[in-house]
Length: 563
Image (cartoon, rainbow, N blue to C red; front, side, top):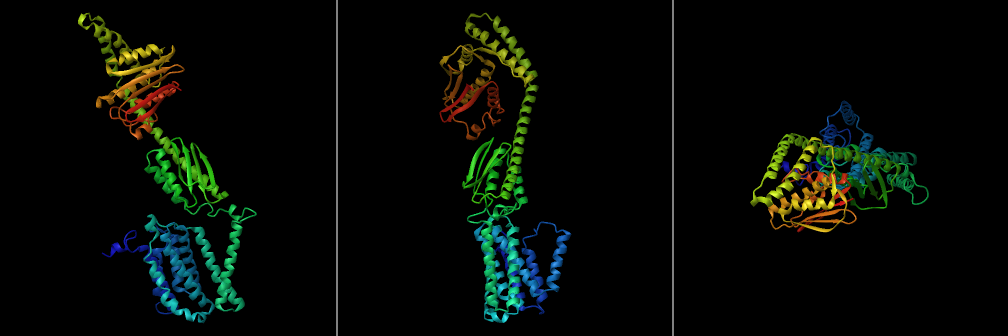
């Protein structure tokens, strides 16, 4: 019953925050009891133990190196055997820097509360207890002793009831090295500045503290004006990026997230969408706009500052509220190059899958060559038998056989040639009107409506038209087998070019199938799913365009026209 209350990610109590709370409480007990008493060693060991449980530098899953072990042992020896108020002062400065760095790197506002309380406690105990010990001015703060001893510990206790950053994001918060180093320097300057002013002026502690804080405030205001001035020269911020090249995010973590997306996504378009969402999580990115071979899109808000980045066929525009400094621009180029490399890798992976798929089809066709040869021989025999038939009651059927079977025999022979040499494309030209009449005769038994607007006297590639129209009409006929009410029509217009439309009144194609039609193989219930893909490629190679111009209930229309 107790364990769930201290679960790291669920429950009322956060284990991570209670580790921080107990670390500060043990430190407070050490400071109040003073140095040189019998409990000093026990309290410092207790405090170091809680610090090791809480510390954000070394991950629990990482294996400690010899260097890290020696550093921890050395720090423990100094704290246990050489403890003094100066050592404690610098130790409080280091803890304040670690906590302050987490305040700036944690994005969730609710998770910042615990770190703000801890940083406030450390500043308070440093200024009201430790620094007066160093300056021998503790008597001046005798009135605040009750506040320090009994009320200040309520802050660490309250920290235990706050949320940790892990509960908000599911990941440990990032330690911002830049802000951590800056806060460490400010805390050290505060301690050393107070000591220097006291040594030179022998002033009261309150006056010393006011002078030190005022001096720091003036220095920070001056630096901020130099960093990003309101007018005049461009400022130091244009020469040194606000986050240098890390931009507030460890490079290794971002690369790991992108690599995981590359493994979990199946195609280049899906990877691009997921990568853009990951890129939008960066604190300085407000909006994105991209254009690739698989499509384009936008995310977020388009602000004043932007960077246009191109890599291979990956075009990216990043919007930011901040001016794009030189170091930040270099970082953006590196990010776009990484995204472009992953995108090209996914594209090559798709191409390889497509090649393997088509190779399997061609290999299957080669295995069917022998069967098709037998079929051609059988059809040749059938044509010979049909030509010799003389019975009067079957004259009409016999005439149809004599006209159509030789054509069927020729088409099967050409199919055999394509299977034997799949890379060789053949063409056969004839008058458009002759091809149109032959098509109507072949499908006279299938109740298909043929509409003719005007047919010019022009030669066309009947190999292409037969291949494409056979695919479209057979698909429509297969659809009508499931719904006999479907009507099929073919309309041709050939005034200033050739335009052929095939329409059926059945159900529309699913959206995900229609989007990839003619671009890659799609799932098919009755075949390999490559008929229309191959027809589209063949039309493109011959200077035609095959497209789905209407896809709605009651009207599914394909168009083949001269591009």
